[in-house]
Length: 401
Image (cartoon, rainbow, N blue to C red; front, side):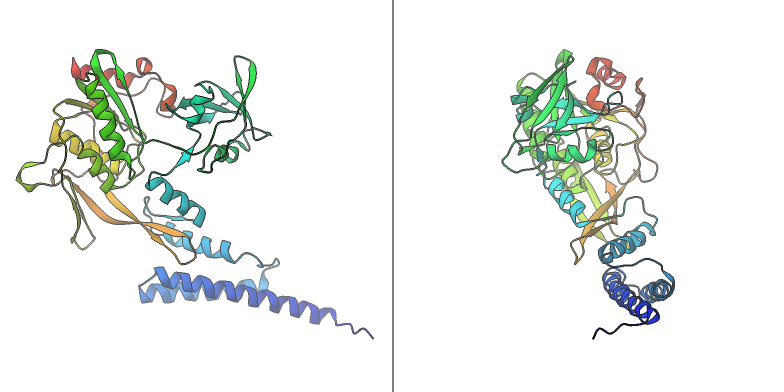
């Protein structure tokens, strides 16, 4: 014979299940909090707040918290990091952390193009094709409009998600339907091309334009190769483009700078980092290279962190002329801390002292010697501007005249 339970008992069982689930979730969250909060009073306060929220939710929340454990934990950690009020500290999910490490190690791969959203069509517009890439091999060109990726129509709503399929290291191709001059064509470029952080070309008058998009593990080697090739081609001056460059580390910026600057006299270093107690953490010295040339450095409000150190030191060691607009003003160093669940937090851990210890660009930025704004506006995609239409490049060329 079937036995029925009362409605009241059924509701009580459901509430109990919700309470148990949430309690387990909060216990996991407290464990994670304890791993990153070392201050006892702060930890006690945070735990008390979590317990209070737990009690309120258990008694009054109309919905359920099943399958929300990881989301609640991530939100708690992200909220804590955001609460620090530091613009350079942030929380990364496990997927974001994996991508962060891939980029920092110089292992970002794909078909070899840069894209932006085409406002007219909502499609992806190809704004740059890397030399020697699979995209170049199959004939993709700047200006092509990507209509479909792997059979799915590209729209404003899904373009950034579909764009992810253009990156990756697996040895397979991705089907792309693109439009050029009103006609559609299909291409299947291979994945696996390692995206460089250094691109370069010769301008008129044997002036080389070198763009550095990030300071990753392989940037110094790419920069070394680029400068040697350009010198062999007769380069007599270098414009280093650091506009919109913000990713990378102080260490990798110093390694890249070491390619071209002479070793400073008097045992000076390219950069020194200090913790909040004033203790020296790391010192980066110039050791290997030196290029006796004239330099101009393009900077803007999105030139930040490692790129600011590079620009500052090249100015103060090799008399480089800064051209553009005032930089962002991040004179600190960050470090990633992996959490037990695979997520990570990036925290500001040190103050950066450049070659000239009297210079402090943190919060204030670096002011260019030649102030010049882009006629197209600061929000323009730099991949889309030719050197002849770039007012800041034209101003940089005056340094060599």
